[in-house]
Image (cartoon, rainbow over all chains, first blue to last red; front, side, top):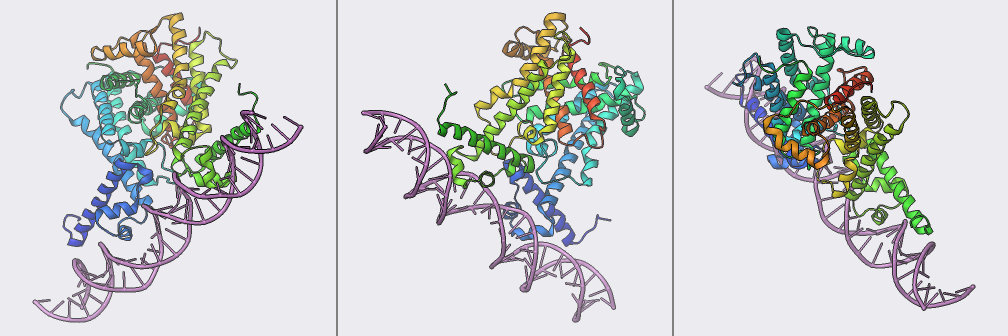
Length: 233
Length: 233
DNA sequence: TGTACATCAGTGAACGCGCGTTCACTGATGTAC
DNA sequence: TGTACATCAGTGAACGCGCGTTCACTGATGTAC
């Protein structure tokens, strides 16, 4: 239905994209806090008030960038699965490939990464639209763990007493076919993956880790083993 | 030498502290990007230009807050070691206690936490003064691993080929008495601890982890095991 | 196919705001003799 | 102990800046008959 459009509709799509591109450029140059509607409008060749035809406020522009960023990492993670390389059965290799894709995207787009995985932007609260895109990376990781569990059935050690109810809730909520212990490990490892990436992107590894690629790969592999993935199919 | 001071020196210390306190209050209310010298001065009861007697610029005030924040988490981590509880020999329990102290501090001071472990403040680059305070938590953790290794001698699996030179450099740099594999694991686990904390503080666990205390404790324990710590002495 | 009207994109001026930093100054506190 | 001078904290006005958002408007593009 959207395939045939009038000039107006086409122009609207192109200009919306141009605004977001310029906004991303400013994001990369100055950070989210300094993203200014006026500067974007200036650069795009419009008067600042004209932007309000496309985004009702600065926050809405920010939201659009956030959604795009989540979608971009999500896509990067998903595509790393399709890439030739490890067979479908080498679960640990697929896991590592996904982790590397996330890291590569983050290093290539540090400010967009900061927008979604850094400190929340002050005064801005993410609307509902972001929670779908935000979970794409996690879904890819869960998928791999699911495949591996179906094939090999390796589960981490049982969860401690006090965590059991929460573990069962987690499993029921987003991984009903996995044992609760794996659901818990999965969530922990998911956050830990971003710990590794954030420390690298945000500079915490300066003067600590020099040769970062092999370091990350080793750490990511270890995370995979923490959720029951085994090397070599 | 600083113990006896004139009224001027004492006033200077007190007012400097009052400025930082008010700045921290604004940090908690609005975030680092909105920290404004003028607003701080207003609240402290001075004219804005008077602040320049205490901090030569906004960035210097920010730096002072960053150093204080690193010192605060560092102190929290160190004090958790002195607290009564696990004996000196239960390394895993001590490890977990330190992790919990870091988490508790972060949850109690989310904006200060964001200042040091969130996205870097745009346009601000941390000076040398911050790197000492920044490493205090890591030093506490390394200390525990060192104790445990001296007592039990458990090391993680050997590092892969490509990482060996970097692993040896790491060990030589900040843990000469540990095997390289442990130094690598230590750095990875250090970043992963902050991954867990950041996801909780920054809201990434909303609708994912509900009962967070036991979840964190279990995950922190697992991290400890990843650096060779064993339960029960 | 042509005309009348509705929709929409973009303009330009304005509102009201707060910011970091500089500067010449006043007056109080400290120091040296 | 008393005086003369230096140091320092705080004032108030000013500079120059950019921001988000609103509003009445012009003129072009689309739509219905």
